[in-house]
Image 1: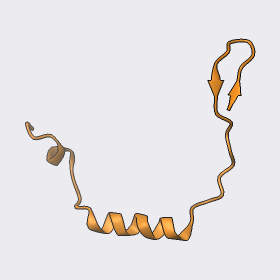
Image 2: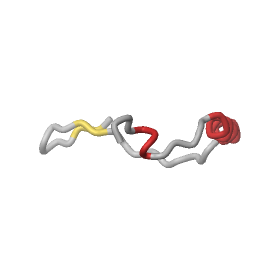
Image 3: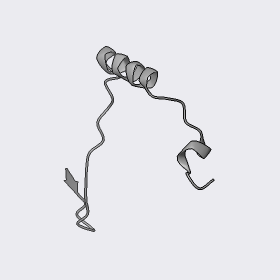
Length: 47
């Protein structure tokens, strides 16, 4: 965390990405496979 000396506002330092792990890619694929496709009309019950 870094605090701006002129304003006193705290902020987090940006860290470079290490890329996506193979396990997280598999998890994402599994979640997408199990989730049904939804349209905007499906999400709005009054439409």
